Image 1 (cartoon, rainbow, N blue to C red):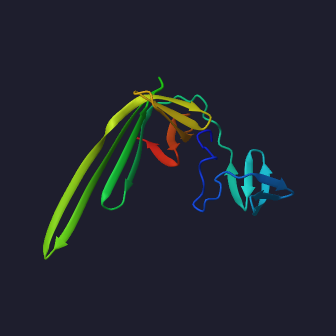
Image 2 (cartoon, helix red, strand yellow):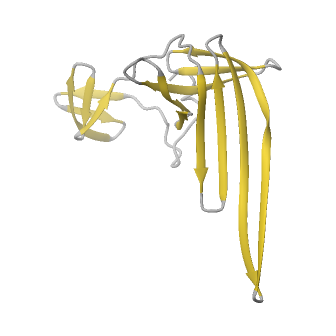
Image 3 (tube, helix red, strand yellow):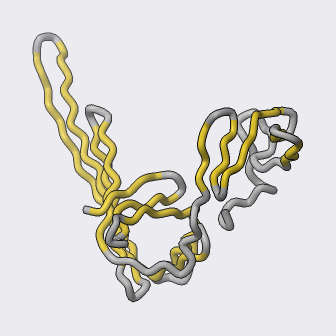
Length: 167
């Protein structure tokens, strides 16, 4: 992915995030770890797991509102990306919290709600990277992928591994 800077990012054990690999016979070796390997067309099988080639999303323009929601039993976090085919986007997010506490036989309820200010700007997709260019001129690149339905409409987007579904 274009947004991934392998020179600056390491794994939790400080090993490099990006490694070289060597293919010999039916084995692929990443660093010091060897795995069984086979290839059929664009598909790879490594240690019995199927990996399919991600088609680049180069210059993709799409429209719709996409939602990510997470609930841990107390807090609901939501984030919405709204994309337009003219290359603009809008981001909205909110968080609500409901808590209950019992002290000395008295039950107390509390709730809170907060919204992050709406941000807007332009977006550009290059291969599997999406760049957000905000209204103030700053830009951010993120790893990007999408899934479309049989009619070609984008149903899910993945931004840095977070899944957003069409609302």
